[in-house]
Length: 143
Ligand code: SF4
Ligand code: SF4
Image (cartoon, rainbow, N blue to C red):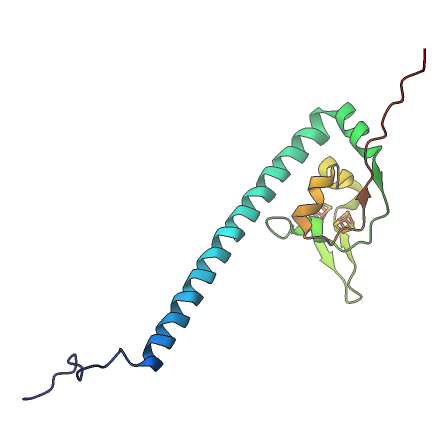
């Protein structure tokens, strides 16, 4: 009988080698899918964070003052906060790894104040050199 291009010899595709390859392909596909989901979640968190910081920096000044009282450290000029969700067109990267803002004097409040809270640090995957201390516990006066 003439063999067509789609016809397989008996048992083809069931050899241990083929099964192993198929298993590997399935695992790779599952890993890719998981990564895509994690990436989408991370980007959604970044989008929420951008919006939250915009509102806080412009409309919730007292909350920002209180939050910044817990912030410590200095900016290392890594520029990671200027690449949250997308790379800001005003970001200038330098060969020494530092970066500057092309509109530094006029940059938005949310840029001036980053990071406002500890959770903001998650959006730059640990690149920020600022950190936050715990809120001090108020001691009651003994009666
Ligand atoms: S405006 Fe300046 S500080 Fe703000 S994200 Fe862009 S480069 Fe960064
Ligand atoms: S991520 Fe933090 S350390 Fe890096 S440029 Fe922004 S504020 Fe500075």
